[in-house]
Image (tube, rainbow, N blue to C red):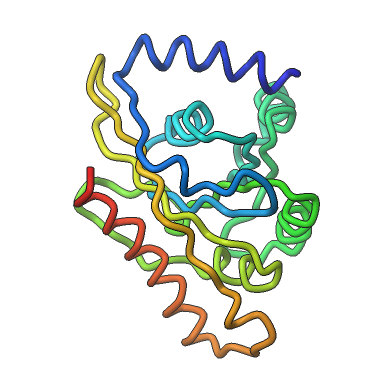
Length: 194
């Protein structure tokens, strides 16, 4: 209930500020565990995806956001949970596994942090490690546009990427990195379809 009320409030303000449209929402599975893997350009990204996604989303968020008690309490209620970046945060992975086991949908930024337009970082491997462990699809999502007053923002949902063939395999670090980079490539390939 709290999530739905907040979603409507955010939706009202976001649609007032920007011209938001979404493409390919039918690529998001209606039920079951799934991961939305998204390019990250602004603090607005989770909000824009939240109002365009056809399902409730949960989100890993940098631990620093939870240092402010009020903000931390609010974003926890909305489905965010902390991750200590660069530390192989076991607690964050356990939370992610539970969400997916319960049939939830998660939002992950494979680049790990915001990236300026034109730049592309190497993908973090967490998205692949979680998807492989829980055997859930990864839906690449590309957000295009500038967060400026009444500018057009397009959220494109790509076709799900399956990791079924890797479910029982022990992958090397290089193989996991290659798969993660492949997910990132799929995200950025959606820019051409916008």
